[in-house]
Length: 165
Image (cartoon, rainbow, N blue to C red):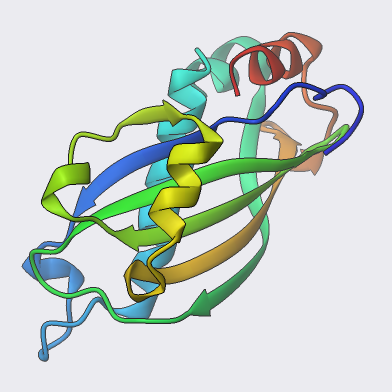
């Protein structure tokens, strides 16, 4: 985390239900769908920060694109599982944002978790290793939409990200 983001980071959680369409013939989530789940959580993270991606294009000619992904698949998710997909800001650069993300199986008691949560709650969620399904490290690049070339993240976006997340 850089010096601009000094206060304690809160972790964002987005619930995802595993549908039949997410699974293979054995009822296990297809590996690429974990990346889709993580994408949803990052998109909702931005929305919770007050940033709408379609407005970024229209107003600032800016888009965010995945530059690098590292995924560690630990346990399978199955049809009808309720998952918690997290998004934790791990680095905020001049033209990039890096996230640590987990896909966790939730119990019924945790099914109402949505939005930013305290690190202590997150640590309790991670405590049961049987429910840790996938760990992702994702780097997002800020691009000029009209040229698809890297560009600095607009200053007001950095302010919103560091204020909320």
